[in-house]
Length: 256
Ligand SMILES: Cc1cn([C@H]2C[C@H](O)[C@@H](COP(=O)(O)OP(=O)(O)OP(=O)(O)O)O2)c(=O)[nH]c1=O
Image (tube, rainbow, N blue to C red; front, top):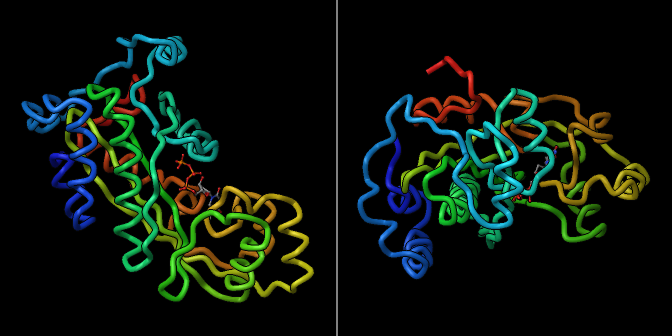
């Protein structure tokens, strides 16, 4: 069952729920009242009633069942892989990476991304996600530049780390959240191998400075857990969470 967004946020971040609430309040205070009913199974919808220029692009995609709040081509590819019908909108969100509680951070960021888009499209289901890797209690996101990519890879090589992806569905002012964890063991890499890999450009835009679905695959010795989680969207968790919230991801989905 959906929780009110502010409650879901508060669970994962002391003080941050108020930040989101304040922004939303500034935009449209009335949106937060009268939207406290849970979303019942079968309460699905097609994304059809749009207005404005960005919405025109969206409305051409008939049958979209939800909005992916993401700029990530990997997340889009994963959802297409399972036949989900969606449109994507890039949210402008400042991501939180304080490192002390990485699981809370990825859930908070996923919720912030979904909530940002839901502010604009409050009647539609919105999916947000955030991926980080954790090694020795320290969390790493996307590298700023090649130097940082080399540094992160020099820490990962020859060791096991955890990939965490937070996910959040938001609809009608309510949210459900979860996070998936995958253990990944890197083979030892020489400095020359790290330099050559970074020179391909592949690490940029990827949490942990590598792409398991790309050239980095030759350095991945072991994976325990969801593969799609490493690539940015744990498909089992995403669909299971959607089901609990009564969100349908494709038009002819009869699983509810
Ligand atoms: C570890 C790993 C991450 N990644 C990617 C998935 C995500 O796109 C990215 C993690 O960064 P995120 O900040 O989670 O996502 P993003 O900035 O790409 O997209 P958005 O915030 O708009 O949703 O790293 C891979 O593609 N392969 C991998 O092996």
